[in-house]
Amino acid sequence: MVVRIGNGCGFWGDNLDAPVLLARDGRLDFLTLEYLAELTMSILALQKQRDPQAGYATDFLDVLQRLAPTLRDQPNLKVITNAGGMNPADCAAKARAILDKEGLQTRKIATVAGDDLLPRLDALLAGGETLQNLDTGAPLATVRNRVVSANAYLGARPIADALVRGASIVITGRVADASLTVAPAMQSFGWKWDDWDRLCTASVAGHIIECGAQATGGLWCNWKDEPDLANVGYPIAEIDAGGSFTISKPPSTGGAVNFETVSEQLLYEVGDPAAYLTPDVIADFTSVKMTQAGRDVVRIDGARGKPATGTYKVSIAYRDGFMASGTLVLLGPDAVAKAQLCGQMILQRLERAGVKPERSNVEILGAGAVVPGVIAAPTEPPEVVLRVSVHDARKAAVERFSKEFAPLVTSGTPGVTGYTTGRPPVREVFAYWPALIAKELVQAEVHVES
Amino acid sequence: MSEAFIPLSTIAHGRSGDKGNHANIAVIAYTAAGFAWLREHLTAEAVSQYFAPLGPSKVVRYEAANLLAVNFMLYDVLAGGASRSLRIDTQGKTLALALLRIRVATPPDVDRMRRGAR
Image 1 (cartoon, chains in turn yellow, orange):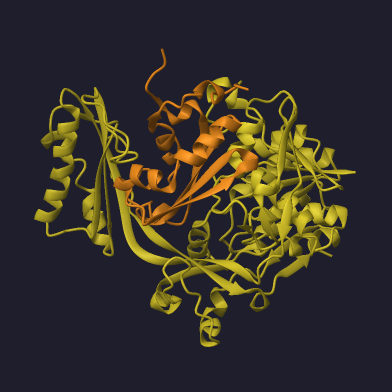
Image 2 (spheres, rainbow over the protein chains, first blue to last red; image 1 turned 60 degrees about the vertical axis):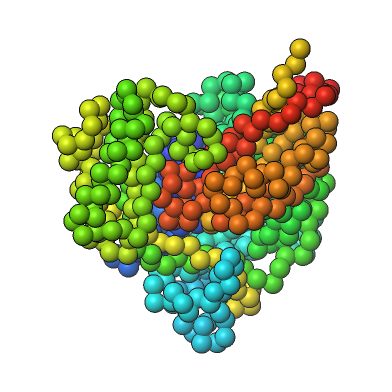
């Protein structure tokens, strides 16, 4: 017996056709869809504040609509997604309406919640939890009045419970990305929740596929070897009962699956590869053996895990002022010098208007600004992009900044162009506050339609 | 006649990503000989010095011999990270390519380290 799990979405904004093509051609048992980056929850939290029925990844409903014919063709295909964000219940209600309209009334939807700590935050702090910043050690009390969201990363178990109870579609709030894959593996094979090696196997599989095409040729250093990246196939983990798995992609798709693409992704966003912490297990990525098992098939076995920690990671976001970034294009000669002058003009005029932003940055893209001071700049590029950014607690200050780009079109240096998209948008900044919380203080809530 | 210096990309590939205000850079050798070279020469100190203009507070190196890889954590290197950095590359996506451009003294056995070498 094997279980085939494919991930058709690596983040909110990923290709809308990918999940449909993967489900159609991937012979999947489970389709996972991942929507929540570190700061997505803060945006969803504010949406929910404005509209109590909002606060989930709306792209998912579009994808579900597109998936309907495939779901009719494949009655056993199950979908697991964290698209619920801050509001799994209303996301599920909208999904229910789509399924009913498409003749899929018998498919049960489940939600997993309990990750949202915001309503309990003051009680937790009063109870002695400090939720101190993992990086700085500062207690959360220092920014408490600015917090907009606080979510624990739940693990695989509540998702697996929902599957056991007959759910075809599982919509969660914040769960660890890899847990979307761990849950169906654990449920399918009936593995024990203290079988750390099996949990590690599934977590490695989940980590490799959670960013979608990044495992199958996206971002691959040897992209020149690669056929047809436009039609890149999304990744499939085929897990077997013995605790090994393969990574592959649907036939006749672009991209590549090989030692290079998979090892690049296995180490993506990893600190100590011998101790990758998830809610489910401490995964040892240095324990796995990787072999090329065929064209675009990589086999992975030998995964060894250690007991999970007693804490969940908590992702907290708090209000931190406002930002804007604008760009102009400068054609040479002297493109770099002209861009420097125009950038200074913007900040000077801002100061003349009585606005000195707390932070500002002038970048000259095309002249070594992407990794500033590290990559040597070409002496005279034919053209550059000037990018100026500011950050300030005062919204009005950043708004005034956004109005200083257009004047350069007539008062700047010759060669200014590219002012076509209007004033740069002013956006609110939500700073990131990582913390830990004891697992016993968080109760996952699973709801399955009857 | 071989060159005196080569870019690191001759013997390795990699990928970088973010964790809050920190970044990781995985550097993966093409061959076992290349991995042995990485272990000896691509130290945390060398990487810290190379990225000094970005101001990392600390650089830690880990090894994954099964992947022929060394993995670096660069702390506080993203000028605020995804949420509040004013840089174009808020998430350190390009740091791996930047590191693979570092020029290193050509190892005597470089031909055993190139992609596809045995």
